[in-house]
Length: 267
Image 1 (cartoon, rainbow, N blue to C red):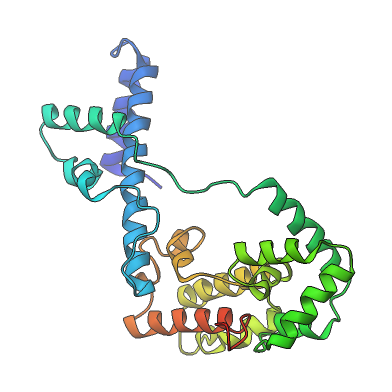
Image 2: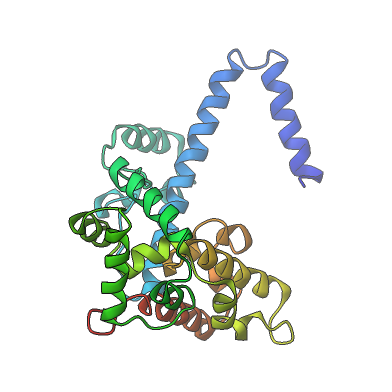
């Protein structure tokens, strides 16, 4: 809640907007919104940098700013002189390399996913599917059995199954994304960090979000910990709540859960 001096300053700005002190208040609001957008781009880049650091390879996937665009980041020019700021904002508006993430999946893949998900819900007792949901290590025979089940069930042809598997870097990961991880299995994987006698309420709540996402989606990439809803509780990522060693362990568990959906000889 905004109180005190800050609230008074905000109130004075709005009074100026609507009392005629500013000739075109809507234009000013639009400009402020744009500045907030620019700042958000910088925050997105920071999250990507933190994600790359935690992932271990240091590679930033789909960077918001390219190396020669660092001067366009809000944190670099927010305290600059008005003339400099105006020049940077103008250049930022003309930049064409600032591509926001979030491309929509292809229609064909979406349809295949929906068809496969519906079929798998009706065959949850399949042995290989149970192994996948219960966080057991898959074997090559399990993958063959799962593919055979999808083809025999009329979900698609072998080429369709192979194509979908390629999009998710493995058939096990594709199917896990559809059926999720058993909630009890996810809870057991992170049981240590759900112990309220060892960790704070905020820490347990954060790990609870991981369990919920694993239950829904089957896999949580380490980089997700730097996105909503996790950043709603830890704005700068898990480092804000956990020690470095605990963050490393959380990431290790996520990778172990993912690896179990990939047979050992192809992991």
